[in-house]
Amino acid sequence: MDLLYSNDRRGVYPPSWYAATATPPAPFAQLSGETRADVCIVGGGYTGLSAALHLAEAGLRVVLLEAHRVGFGASGRNGGQLGSGQRVGQDSLEALIGRDEAGKLWTLAEEAKTLVRDLIARHGIDCDLRPGVATACLNKSEMRETHEYAELLASRYGYDQIETLDAEWMQALCPSPAYHGGMLDMGAGHLHPLRYAFGLARAATAAGAMICENSHVRAIEEGRPAVVVTEGGRVTADHVILACNGYLGRLNGRVAARVMPINNFIVATEPLGAETARVLTRDVAVADTKFVVNYFRLSGDGRLLFGGGESYGYRFPSDIAAKVRKPMAEIFPHLRDVRIDYAWGGTLGITMKRMPYLARLGANILTASGYSGHGVGTATHAGQLMAQAIRGQAEGFDTLARVPAPAFPGGAALRSPLLVLAMTWFSLRDRLGV
Image 1 (tube, rainbow, N blue to C red):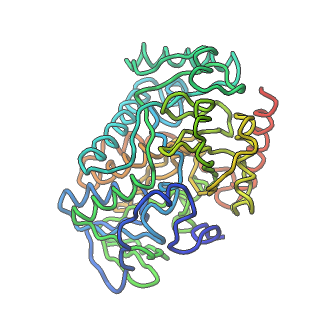
Image 2 (cartoon, rainbow, N blue to C red; image 1 turned 30 degrees about the horizontal axis):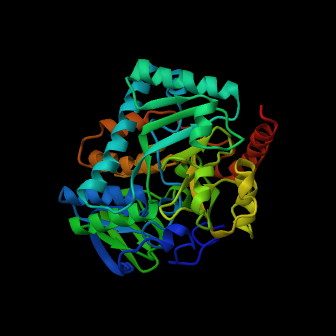
């Protein structure tokens, strides 16, 4: 199954609230004929656009190939949360790779947030960046663990942007009967993800990058130089960057064995008016502690943007709104019958360790993907790190590339059925509250 086309119409953005409230750049031409480049980038999401921008600013000839439109995939459909740290907590990273390497990863993660803010400011990207992401806990045990983690970040990493919340303060922030304390990270943030992607695309082209849309890459002929082949043309390039994430398909077996595509879903309710105070009392985003996580925030026009729901298999459910309404009603029972104006799905990439997969696939081929739901900052930063690596400054890239990245059991062939088993188990644990 080709996930590029199994759930979406070619070159047509999904009917999301994001697409309804963003103005895309004028369409970029399809690749046609033979083209020469210093770097050819495959994928027009945050990773590819960031790499294209940084390489073009350094004076390199860059061609970016996107099968649909820029920002079409997860970069334009996600929850818009710019989180702190890596997808995996620092305590877990210390146990996995040691305190020194974990410290380097924390520094890189802080650099990722700073990079996003700097790009938005430097290029005047209108994407409603706001501070604040809360972690909402489901019980006292999780609240205690979350508070201990906040203390670890403060004492060991000097991170002082977190306010711990007891049950009363959590209710004051998010009056849901499901939540019992948590923490509020004002060093994190949230934004309009599709507007951000469009801003990166405009900045990259202004810097001199060539973007080609509706240019599905069919093959990569490795060598020096490499040749990237689409249905309409060929790019001969000294370097290649794979920035496909969940839409890689069969383009590279090594990446496919380690990065699994999964689907996630979001709805936007009707404007809630005065009811917004029964959802959130501050303009922050929220993610809870369920394994099958619920995440939400309010839009600028007073809608609840709520992500959640499980999907096993690569096809989107026929009724996405109904799929997401169920967990939304568990968190906010008073919204059980609220009108849903937009409902959409998207495909992201996850890894076994829930850490991004950065690797050198050959002497002149780099890849970054598998952000596991933490891609707004990490993907943007990964694009910059690959641009730096191509120019001979590979310290940041190599630090992330050293993180263990085991293949899924059975590789690409068996990863999906095994994921179904795992997700069914963790979903059951969520329901039982264990």
